[in-house]
Length: 447
Ligand code: F0G
Image 1 (cartoon, rainbow, N blue to C red):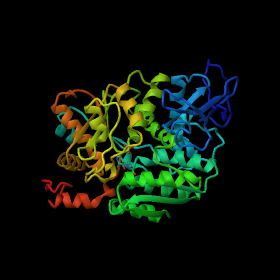
Image 2 (cartoon, rainbow, N blue to C red):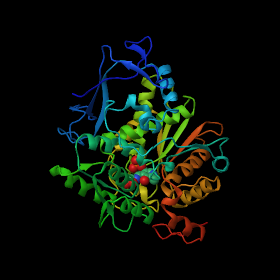
Image 3 (cartoon, rainbow, N blue to C red):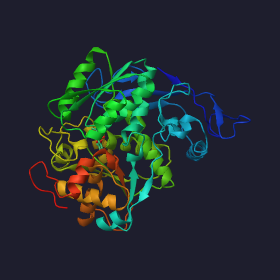
Image 4 (cartoon, protein in one colour):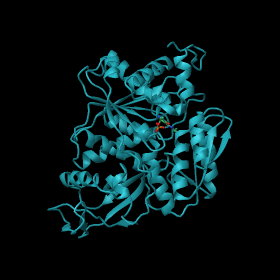
């Protein structure tokens, strides 16, 4: 099992407190009697198999279920001390401190010697959106814009961690299936790490901008007839022979990076979580990561309550919402998912069990919105001077619906997570504003 020596300590805790002269921004805590250890465990309660953190597995080798990274030993963190160290790092010029992911590295499964592959991800704005608030019927609405990451989507926060792990394991080739953003992000981080990158994407269904990014960063893109789910199945077959490292959100290291967005959000809100956190749902890695991040923040007493997590899906690609509505015991895949929000055109979400834990634990919900609602909400986000890609706008559309239904009250605090940048899909934007946007079922979208 990999052991990590903690640097950074907690005054009054089991660590010796040592101040290094000349490094005022950095307090080094010297290991006393505790080593931090991480493992990967199977989320299936009937299996619970445990794997070393550096074992090359994506899913449980015993039962095939998803894995989750867990800290199994090490002293409890002290919330005040952590906040202070994290604040100090913001003024540091160390590459890791400048990353909105690695700044929270006490919660990441690496030691201090690891070679971090970073593009300065995270540190994204939390915007006030007064026009969107009005549109939704809220007094106030804030938008956490993950589209302001280096490659224009939230994927970068997970990719920095997954590619760092790939590099640490000595991988030369990384691969993913993608509706576009994972592809762009992986291609960029692979380029930084000097690795080969191969992507499987559904032919004709990825926006030109996302494809252009992947190509420019040097990835080989293989287009497959079918949809994202077809690509996902194909890529899982491909990595069986061990020739490449799979970096979809099935890989638990992706979730580790993405969970830090919850940390950054908590910090931006002075550690007071909102009543509601609303995220789009596709393959469901993002909602899973928020669930894990919030769980860890609560356990470390960095926050004192959870926001309710609402996952919003496009009505034509909503297997998770159907599972939720029907109180089903298992998720039934959608064979032909359909939506103009191409990023979330997914019928067989791999992380649905983790996302379901996140929704259940937070007393949240899963809802759907129509193509017209997505398009209108997207235009409204633009009118706030912010903008986003279509999948992200499901959040504002969903909030409006929930306020209308009185599930969200007018004076409650609400944060929506925007996942991708406006320029990711300009074809959609222009068609909408010219009144030429047509939904997959042939209905004309009204401007
Ligand atoms: N928003 C955007 C902009 C996305 O690109 C994605 C997923 C999601 C939301 C949904 O997030 O899958 O974690 O529930 N895009 C993946 C991709 C599937 O390949 O880029 P999720």
